Length: 174
Image 1 (cartoon, rainbow, N blue to C red):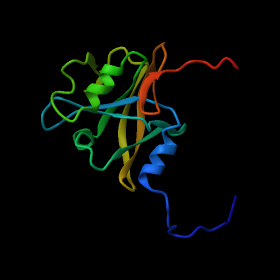
Image 2: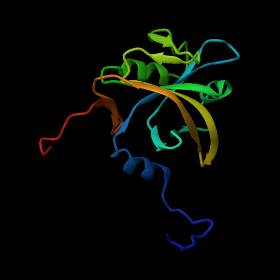
Image 3: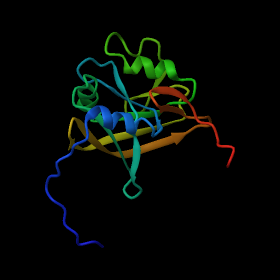
Image 4: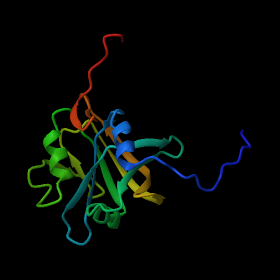
């Protein structure tokens, strides 16, 4: 174990545009974070490309959302949410849930979980979660959530890379 200490702050010279230009080279999966908004009783949701496992024991996941998100407060109010791992071909769902206006769920087929959260039909899997912590992540909020139950299906993932949505293709070198 390292005993090295780090300064409390480090002055970064990285501009947001440069950061975005470099990070767009890293492909990410696409996940729909959905809940039942306790204020309206209807579904609320958003898309994240930062979803990942955090811990096996206890089973924890994490993702980040922009502080400016108008959808995250609706999901956060519910305290319970579901994650639908979007499949290749579900680009329209991604676009609908990324929209800033209108009824995001109007054209989306989904099933209500035992926790009342929307599971997107045709997704590669779903994970029901409870919010454990919201942490400061600069212009984003880092969410840590406990996994309550989960299930997987067969198929290929929807992937975001270089500003585009697409599918995963195995390398010829494999």
